[in-house]
Length: 459
Image (cartoon, rainbow, N blue to C red; front, top):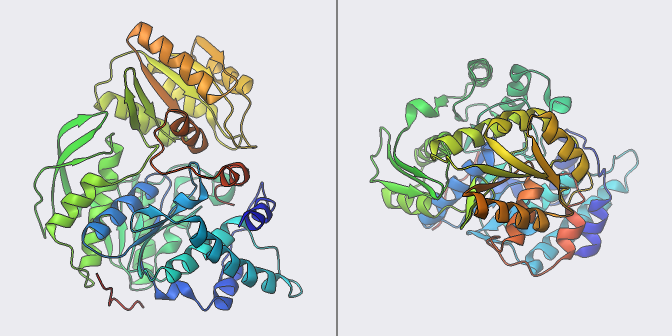
């Protein structure tokens, strides 16, 4: 397996090639494993991974064998592929990788065929893994965009588009409308689409695309009502009601008001899937929502002092973090540990957070595209944070920030990159799955994070 992923790490390391021709040719050689799946397909700028996690957790609680494919990974590539709530094993991943590598090498042996990208390979691995496991129900997250994303070869049970914002503008367009049009590319003829809360101009683009495809467009905010009775750093207690059900109060271990939008989108998608023949009792919603695992997203990982880890890496994400701090009534001074990849608008991100930050440490993430600690520290000062230092690594930064927070009754916030979030989770012993091999971490952190169904699903 290591040799295959080493070769993947060398493929278009700093770029990507959007388009569906190559992935279609790969899966054709593999016998079209994607056609065996009933899929909830999710695109969006922020929140799509959380919606995938919420949908998967409820489906699993209903007793269905279910898979989840998300990206990027925080620590190990295995966590991109969950089967029944557990990352795939080394042996499973190795077997699927061998099968995909054979198809890729055979395809690339043909004249005029471009090199297969990192994300195309990993997406093909997902389809093979799920076929080998005998799983026919999956929550599938796009990597980048939607229309030309490698996952967009599926015909979904239901599509979901989460909040749209400005990110990856070089690839997707420099306006919310252009980005929404790319995300709306996952809408398929006659297949329903759930639209989460988002700017009006983005919603209009998605509704128009759905109308052209003859796809029913479901507004999650209209379809699902969520009342929050308690919100803390450890999560929030909510009461959910729809036309089909009224759930008892449930504690969701995802903090921040932005997660309520994701809950609405997930519940709307699940109810749409239920209308297609999936039995989803109220107990499945309660159990699934209360046990969902989606680490590194405004996650409280320790309490003395409080340490919050969030992978927000764009301005919209920074706004959500700031709102979450306010919603959870965090009034203590904030010590920020920040690190960014070089392709992000780090200064805009930091200017949004700066008013609530007292002191900060700049660090480099474990990705070759990372800004240096000194460069991040300079951006922290430009954003208006007066007390700024650098640290040689995440562990050192965390030690310094926690010491300061202890002395000043403060809170530590780790923010700026999903790679930084993964590093911090490992450093604090809060990564939820075993880390038994270092090679995947070392090899794959070097890679870019993006570069009609039969519904007889047995329980």
